Length: 578
Image 1 (spheres, rainbow, N blue to C red):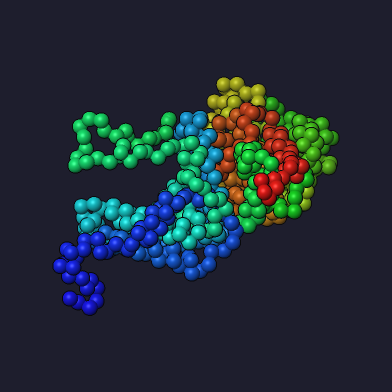
Image 2 (cartoon, rainbow, N blue to C red):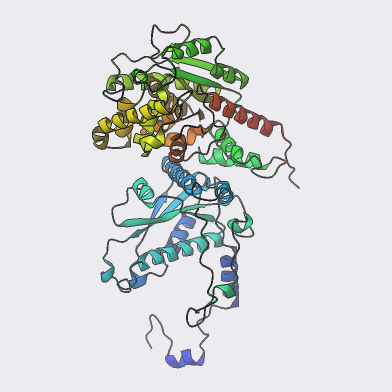
């Protein structure tokens, strides 16, 4: 017999068919590891030692592969910005999937925790290199997807190895595959199988998470084992489908602190998750905030897209400066400060407002650009300064005033999230059917004019700037800068309705990591608002069918956040032995 490789003889193997067994202790240990494998969603911030990371990767590399093709590629991600962008993609996909489920199933899906993408110190994306033609790999000519199956086997090896070493692993597939591939700059022909979170677990579940969440139960073995051939009757049921129709350590610390409360974990639902992120962004604490109310008039109002005359903008802003507008009153009631920005109100600059007005001629969207490149740059920079100043007081809430600006917002939404114009235009305050029709016609004309130049944009950032110039308004440009400045200063930004959410989306297109700083204060009645929030991957704290504008919804949400922080500060804690 050879002295390398298999040195056993057929006689020896025949005499002892069980001789290859590793013993009862090994078999029992393997069974324990398999039974104890869990999809971990909460992680400690402690680093994963390099030797353990290597052990996990080696286990994946020792997986079976059809034709010994070894198609797996392991992309190890530690960079905070990349993990933040991945979390944004997953948030967005989660909301998109939830929108197609029943109300109960959607709520349960949204309850599932995905913060492991930000909390886990290591991300591993398993990619399958499919560029070798299937016919050239033994076993793939007849089953071309066996390369993907091989990569799945690698994931299982890694998962079990991680569990055996006490590490936690979670498999996140709530991504559009093309988006995740683009994030990692994967070449054509290399496909992802999702994102593996790896780190020391901050939970030790005794049963699978989806069982504990009452999402589903394990099917009895006898219901899925079929002998010899598929029976003609009494077949197993088809797989269930419910279609229907900040810094890592700070996020973990915030979650830890919330778990210490004498209350069930995440008892405040979505608010708890937002509070975790707010506390992670501002570990020193937040006691208040500022409403930044930006106002401007718009040439598009002359096209009959609003029920109110243009001078109403100036009337509302004057009332806000006197503390008497609905937005100013909402800010006062929420314990927030107020910064009013004159971003282009017709007439002289309003006394008491921060001036940030365009210098050049502005178009009506339908026939000419809303702004010039120079004004976009100036207004963005002015907004950055305002945002940094507002961030000193804590939360930064966005608000806007401007007769006709819902038409601008509808056009921008169509350009940014691919909504149809007649689905994007809303009724608007006081509008009737004729006004809605005119708004849709103006938006369609604006998009037809802008589309060729938008299609030539080189990347997401240039696309956003082009859209803002051609279809936006000065108050939206200022508020986009406010978001960028506030995020740069480390402050959470609370969005309001459609007009005050688009600056968040524009800011994310300009700087993707901004998404982690955004809070969706509310979902308004504007029809495109839900699509914008899904694109941002944000769930609204409130859904009250508001039409107020002026940051009212954002102030109400900010009040909830501040109350939630006080609840956490005042509530009793559990003791060590409880």
